Image (cartoon, rainbow, N blue to C red; front, side, top):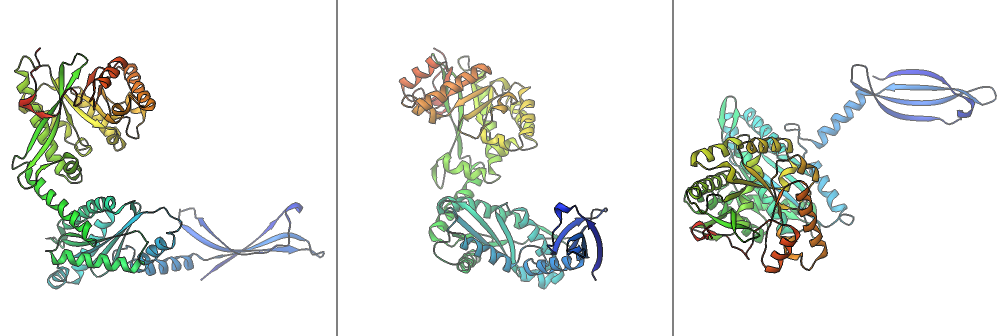
Length: 505
């Protein structure tokens, strides 16, 4: 039922008009904070000369109608059980992508079709109420894995879909990102569920289709994702499959490497190489510990291949811990050698390691277990690691700094950095990225960047290490510019510890 209100409003002569306003809808907030809607019609009240003297506002409370419209909208576009978008809304979002393709920059999009393995058994054994509760929990977990440019939807039954827009510019790059997220989703949905006090294990099969809107319509890519999903079912379930055969081959290779990587620590396949760091007199003052992987199955695998893969999974925590312990053990061994006792070791730390609540304790335990001198340990971080949880990062760094551990900022000048953090972080060393060192002789711009970094470091009383020094000309330029330490193939390649030159003259 609508509630009608009427009010009379006088207006100055300058604002009077015979105009009539109809069906003005406004949303207001009541004193208790609740919202209500009114439909307003405003008509002029005229005198005997036909001139308006007042305005009459007739307002109807249409709150119930608005709520009814919203509920109808929700039922039309959202799944009643999980509250996720339904097939209709997903289809409209897909059609919108295709309709705007001429105005948008070229981009690769992705569809992930997710089907629960053996869901029928849940309904048969525990009943449909338990099955519905499972679907709610799956929808909630999927929603937690969804980013700002992504839409999670339920198609019906135990089928869900994730639409990711604007992943990358090329299919190759997009496949890497989507494969990583699909694996995270697979792992998240495979965690045990609690239904009526019982723990239930169920897994998803995921099919992926990448598209750029240049060849097919929206429904075609849903079919492709469906085909890929059934490939996952056919290959044993609980898997991720791509519709594109070439991308599927890349995914298979990635999964094989991930399996082997998970075994590498236990099978003692990792080793540390050390690249010496020199002063201007070409005397070794320390080294950087660099991990190498000699897989029994895959052979020597480049760090450029397996480190990003490890960082996308929790394996980077185990690997990083192994590197830290191995480096601390080596520091202790060098402390017994008169020629090497003053050497430092720089260890690269991943963002995931540094953000672990127990990271400080992990470092303390490694130092204590191996009897390493904390003043000889350097932890290297990158600028990109300072973009997330910077306050917690600073707190952890300062606590480790009190032990004597020093920090280096790697690849300085290549990230989206703010000079503000240099005054807040307990940084001891800046490392000039090799890209600047490589071109500084022939590029005024790169030479200016190097000079600026050295000047900035001098002002802030920070040490500087130049990476990628490969020629005598580069070394001379850096020395003349005031650089103190150097690292690169001119002075020494990364080698096993037994191949490092003795530190004594």
